[in-house]
Image (tube, rainbow, N blue to C red; front, side, top):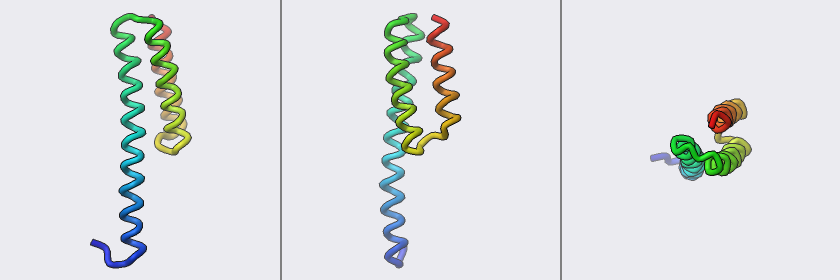
Length: 86
């Protein structure tokens, strides 16, 4: 355990940020899974709705700095192509 006050604070702050990042990543993964499930079920309307929600979650995660913008763009592109193939 750290003895210096600033080091103790860094530990607390990093734990808090890690928890927040984990939560946001989990929301993104869940949204992507919903799109994939709708694609598997061949439900175009549900897939489109899930895609819009997933894009929103990905954009939010990118704005928060969780994902790099190119990573977000790649994920959105692949999901969109998959939905458009239905």
